[in-house]
Image (cartoon, rainbow, N blue to C red; front, side):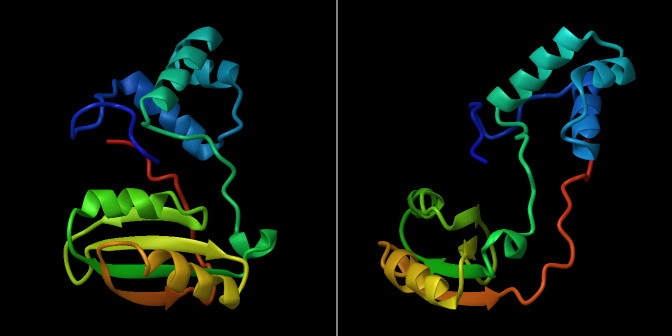
Length: 158
């Protein structure tokens, strides 16, 4: 998710907005009227706040799936060692349809990306033809997922 706000720090959230986020983390389909009763706002006020949270990049409302159950039998994390402007490379990687997660990091890798592919042949194509061919990519290391055991997005707010 690319933030839509300016600067390096996320927009400040008041306690009500945090409570709305937590309500939606528990159940992304929870009606705005129900959320409103829980946080002390009208349905319309909740709708406006949710839209603002989406517009500023604080959150997304999506269906989280197990990729293996919807036709994508191969997932992998790819560690990338790179040279040059990491932000430009990160943007190029983020533009690839198979990439669902991109982070610039410190440590043994400069970037980590997660890819979701139909099968091993598709993973090889993405790795060889799309990732390794990008300017600045020096080396990659691929970590193939064997079984998805936990995937949660309900960590709350601070």
